[in-house]
Image 1 (cartoon, rainbow, N blue to C red):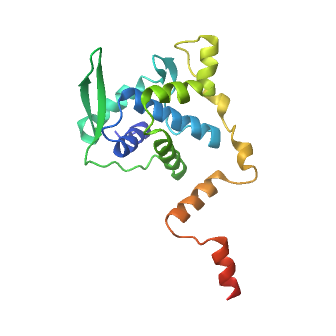
Image 2: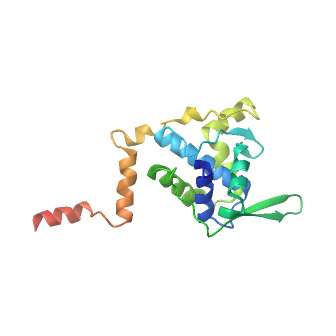
Image 3: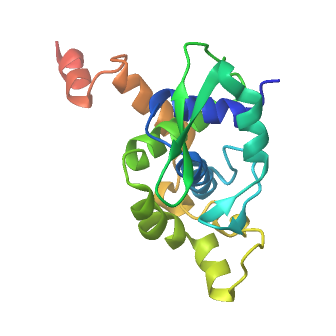
Length: 192
């Protein structure tokens, strides 16, 4: 079984191997869903978040980790003075990311680039707990309730009024791959 959520977990662990534990990984997935909903109106994952200890969480996460087993990722137990923790490591076995669209992969890369190196405590306090769905539940003291993620669907739409965010992502990818030229280069070529 190779679900979309399992592909998301493998994708993140591949890029941040040895740097993430369970809580941190779940919060990065939450932030990918958060940003995707704001921009496109839909989440990257199929997780349904509840407010549990340390913020947004879905128990389905454990099933995904178990199914990835020691084949696609390896989970190492780490002992701390007051508790036990885990760190995820990548394995050489690859997954085909056929359940993730180009836009969803872009959102995951964005989250990894912008939040992947942020310490867990800072990530929780400065980012996750300041997202609108978490603030909404915190304000109501609704621990254990489902996060109202739909409240942020398409809120960034005004930032790209008249533009297609998918086209913008494809354009950026073209620039990164060197498949496009600057406007100045195009004008110079026309004048030659």
